[in-house]
Length: 254
Image (tube, helix red, strand yellow):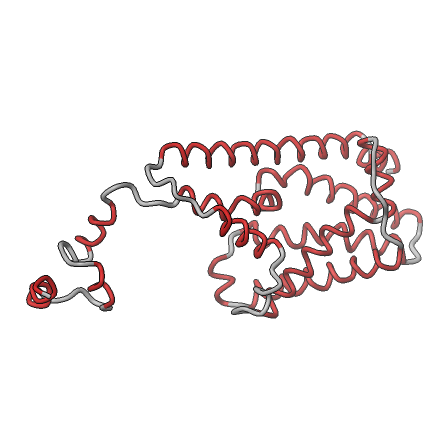
């Protein structure tokens, strides 16, 4: 079993890391190319880049958004993401693994803060799973991968914490470490091909919306005709329902 552990830490880890980096780089390049192509083809090239930058920063650091419609869920999700970033990147054992795999590394967290972040990620992840299972609206919007990803992301945290702090026999320790390593490798292998790719796409989401989601010329008039407002001034659209024919004529006279 030790040979499988070393394989997961060594060749498989390097393969998973390279595929993750290359896959995410491909996703980012395709997104940027798509934004540029949409901008080139669109006749309306007025894009509020400063507003987009502010909105993007607001989503990446959502301090003001945490107390919105579902504050408990939002805070829990934010804390979960903090743990997801802090522990894999800054745990001392992981930093040594990164250095051995890619040849460079960065300062590591002390053990106690790393333990706190691990427990924070486990508690927040369990809370998110419960919120998705027991909240009717969340269940209605959830797909299969929405139920698979949280337990998969939690597996390395739980097994790693148990291996570091529990008194385990050699066989149980190896089994737990095997799950820890291969779950982490599987996560890296699948990130570029699933919704978790939003870890690199999030900074581009506001730009995509602003550049790509524009009506083609003449679409506004067609929408107005469909709603029964053809030929009317746009200020009549304050009404919640389409005006009657007499109302339309009166509006045009006014």
